[in-house]
Every structure is written in structure tokens, then in C-alpha cells.
Image (cartoon, rainbow, N blue to C red):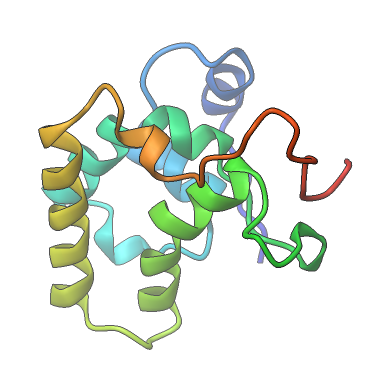
Length: 132
């Protein structure tokens, strides 16, 4: 099944204008269950992490053993719990609690939280991940 963005959401995503909406988030990540759509915590989560979620990319085998680049890490940290719930391997309440906990961590250090999601690398560290 493929879910496409509406023309308005696709235009906003291309230009990166405005905050990410829950509908755009669900369209970008079809693995996230739709039954969470009206959860207030999901709306707060998307509002807080919209910039990182726009960069998030599903990990692939070419990302290497070190966890891939920032886009891969954003997916692994911000979307993976929701995807696990989507395939039935986690409970709804626990998944929502994890979102709330991540939001609480973010609220303690909002300016630098995104930096904590990716491992620190020196400037001479070769880039990992897919070339395309």
C-alpha cells in the first residue's frame, strides 16, 4: 500500500515551510498506525520534532555498522517505536508513554536535543550511509 501526500502537504514538504502536521507525518511514514492520528501527544511530538522528521529516512543495509547518517538516526530514534507498535509488537499505552518521555527530554534542552540524537563525529570521520 502506498500513501501519497496531498498536493498541499507535498508542496509544504518540498519547501519546508510551516510546521509539520500530523497528516503529513502519517503520509510520510505509512508504517505509523492511523489509530494514533487524534492523540494529543502525537500532535505535540510532530510539532516538536518536525524538522528532524522531515529529514528522517528509513534505515537501509548500506548505512553500515555505525548507525548511518543523521537522517537514518532520526528515523531510528523518532519513528521506530511507532513502527514497532504498527506491526503489533508493542502496546499502545507503552508507545504513547515513550513519546511522552522523549518529549519531556526534549523540553529540558530544546536547543540542543537534536544533537543528542546523532553520534558525535570528528571532521575527518568518513561519511557513512547511502551515497544517493
